[in-house]
Length: 208
Image 1: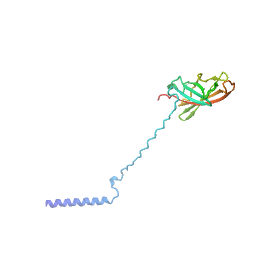
Image 2: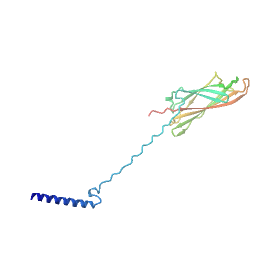
Image 3: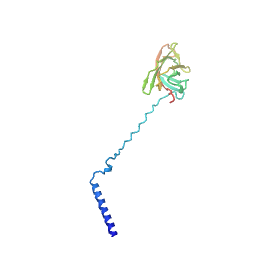
Image 4: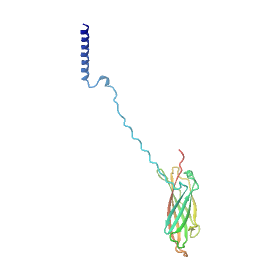
């Protein structure tokens, strides 16, 4: 009798379990899952592209620069330098630029070469473009017909660039040289020749 009773209880339990499973299969969702929050995936934002680093030219980064120009038959050798070290070339400082010039003829027939005028026009640049600039600097010869610059003689002068906008990152000098060439070695007449040059110098930025 014990065996028969145990088998009956087990059979009844199996019928009850089957009934429960049949009831659940007719539901679209189990009751204990109805109010559970659904998960969502938040897209990862794209990494911001780093800003391009502005590359600033500095023609005086080594302390000096030598340029060679031509004005007709005249060849010019010009050396630029500054007594103020580049780390002190700040926006608020007075910034000296010295130039030294010598001239020579490609076909030397004994004519003399004179420098009548030098004009240095300043352009100031910042991260967003041009900034206010000081007035041009001009050196006009005080002797007639001009300063004698045929090698081995030379011409030197210093331009002082004043304080500029605090946002400045560089200064570019556009320099024009006006020369007089004797038409013949005995003539008192001259032909005018002009040469142009540019010099860009970085402005030292304050330490962050």
